[in-house]
Length: 299
Image (cartoon, rainbow, N blue to C red; front, side):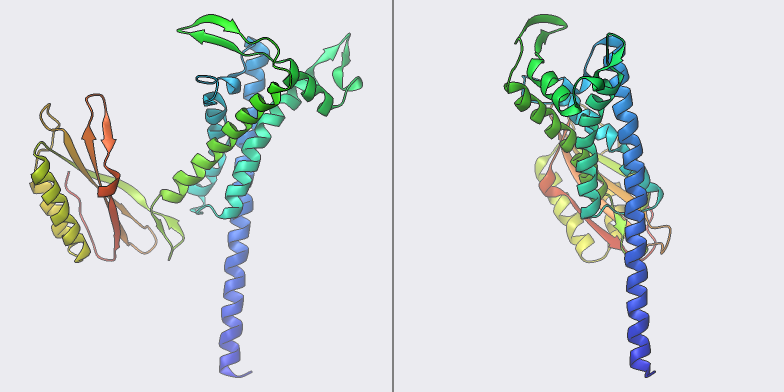
């Protein structure tokens, strides 16, 4: 076989092996997600069965499905655990699985209620199908309104609107799954080694002069763009204050992470403004970069 053909065959086999590995990791991570989804559904069912409270139906102002979003987030927790354990960045296939399994949690909770319910000592499945049961449940559900723990009233049976209310909850479950995917996708990742970066070294500084703060950010970005990352780190460490005080309403943060495989570093910068109650991110000031050499981040 000619050398060129041998080389081409080797590349094809290598690509095939990489594709198979990614597919296998997708399946393993999806299995983790399915496990937490089932566990979440069982927990939601037990809470509802024991206390008469459907956590996943909890909403703010009737339109924000907070309970469903949190339930979907928890149901997708296995994806986070699997992705971090196997250093597997989620793919579009994983996103599809996360949304499908998060939404499936909603139906699994109702199915658990369906198989556990009895009428005159006989399972309800002897009388109606799951689809019919679900139709009855959705049409006959009602929504109660509370303010500071006190019930203000209820809607009565929703009828056909019960389907709209169910769709709202389903959307909440999906949003919870998407949130986990977005977070995993945002974490620094070494494409060369297929690893999430480790380490959480952080350097925070506080300032009160907006003009000087903006100038500092510009100079820091210029140093990073020029590849002088350690100089930028030292420059950031030397300016402003280490501790937050009342008059210091601006915060800058450097985060340093490292790939355990190839040793490559990742340096990220972010800034925030004190609103009087918490820190609000200044998103337009964020930047990050990778660096092949050694870096240290003083506190």
